[in-house]
Image 1: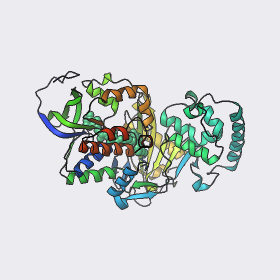
Image 2: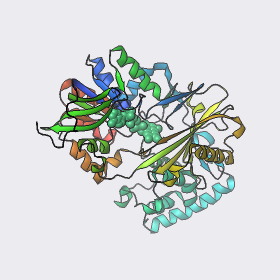
Image 3: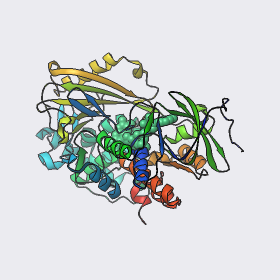
Length: 479
Ligand SMILES: Cc1cc2nc3c(=O)[nH]c(=O)nc-3n(C[C@H](O)[C@H](O)[C@H](O)COP(=O)(O)OP(=O)(O)OC[C@H]3O[C@@H](n4cnc5c(N)ncnc54)[C@H](O)[C@@H]3O)c2cc1C
């Protein structure tokens, strides 16, 4: 056997041969397992943590259930929407998807569906914003924007852009508008000039989400987004398939265009897996590092982000009806505040709520060294200052730190040169299905397509329809 990389030194470890090895019990790995189980195939699933669900996990805390972060489930992929609908039935509930912008101590509506055109803006602010907008449109006619900030200020007016989008966007993505180029579509002169306020607000919302969606009906699992993974686990367990928790891949070796050996540290010792098919929900950087003999340093450095989540469990009802607030106020460090009472589910007992306060940080931000207590104090202080909570009503709190996690990731990141290079490096391995995708729906779709490809022995559909460098819509335009 030829191997591109040296094998781990302990090559006397037991060998386990299997039809399909699934790495990771998140939404993509579990969707693949579910598809295979339906066809009577029993994959071997390994998961390094002690939990299923990956980043689509819900956590029970006393009478509360919270998601890992906000977890807005998109229905932009009809196959996935139908799949979740079938899994959850009545528990896949419609909610009002009311989103607010927290700005200077006030909650503004992101949609005019709730408080009309004023969106909760005081009359004076609306008036000065309108004057500002008129001036911006005049400038728009005579001067080309030089950066992303000028682009939006010219389209939406500086005041409206700041009140509804800029602060949140910059925290979420860790980039300043003034340092970013004008959007490609405008630079190429293709932009349709819409001067309707609604179109602008909608455009800014899509920009903040990375162009994720403009869907109209929003649903959430009654017991948190982790309920999807819970149902998947229940179904595959009934088919006799087990998830092997606490089992981590630490190296891979390849031979003749295939992944030949996968080295796994399990609770009872190391095992070498040899699988006909490997479905991996590792991020591409990690996959490339493992293929390099487990030397993490071999992957080209990608910009690391982290998310710090503070949960506050309250003995009082929420003071706002929104599912979440995007924090555009630059005087506040937090980026987003989710209110689980607003998801029309059973996540919080009646008359109470649980909030998740998210801080989006660079991976090397020194603030990450703060203690959990310090983060909790900061979250309470920022919520109380904005009149969102009464600190006396807090009965419990919890802090979760997600290292190397970019909540703002979208398929666009896969188009960066470093990532394209990494995706190119794994492409030659014909028995490897890389199914990690940003977005739980896109990840689920990739998992389902990988399962399909394994069953048919034909991977072209997976390669084309679940192309990680494109959006679902672009990759499936011809399907
Ligand atoms: C803070 C945050 C907020 C987000 N919010 C949303 C949202 O609102 N809506 C949305 O649609 N998407 C959201 N996303 C994105 C979404 O969570 C991911 O796209 C999705 O979870 C990817 O699914 P996956 O199964 O491919 O990978 P993951 O969910 O990452 O699961 C991978 C699994 O593999 C396991 N694993 C990792 N390494 C190894 C190893 N070496 N050996 C064995 N097992 C391993 C992990 O423990 C994990 O369980 C968010 C992401 C973040 C970070």
